Length: 228
Image 1 (tube, rainbow, N blue to C red):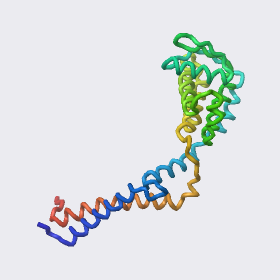
Image 2 (image 1 turned 90 degrees about the vertical axis):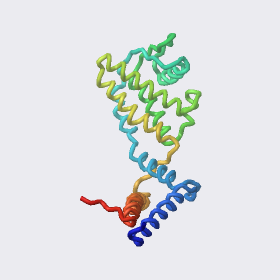
Image 3 (image 1 turned 135 degrees about the vertical axis):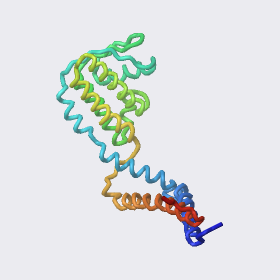
Image 4 (image 1 turned 30 degrees about the horizontal axis):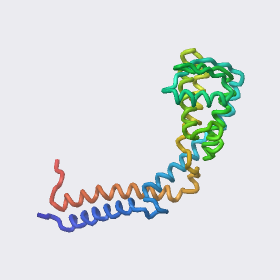
């Protein structure tokens, strides 16, 4: 039995409207994409624009020019070990490949010049030179850099070379990782999309509230009320 037809009808209309909008959101009506995918791409582009720390790390890396490092690195398998050796040799490091480990030594600053140059190229979506340099997929090469720097960081911490380890962490997380994650995405300033950002955030709030009020009005229309 409907106790309050006006409230119940209003709630039903709002609920129908909610699902109609939901269907539109999932339809490819925004440049061949649904709105959720389109907005996700837009926010990724905006966040990429504020994640460019490579020049700062390139400047900081100069402090480590001439810093000699020596360590053993262990890749997950033989193929990864061969790729790591290729990447490190191209960066000017001395690499001796064993059955299970790579013995790596050389100038940390010089190595970082190569790592950051690769990250910079990938950040601006220019992966061709990176793939050509190593002879395999550019994203795999950058992931190998990420793995190499992670293992080097661990080794340097064990050697109590904490300053060097900390900077490798910074390069890995603030340069190599963003370049990998944002590869293929075109960076945009939030100013270019300010109106869309405001509308999307406001629309999200209104859309979410409409669902809650639809349920509230339907329940009140049925005569269900919270009582203390």
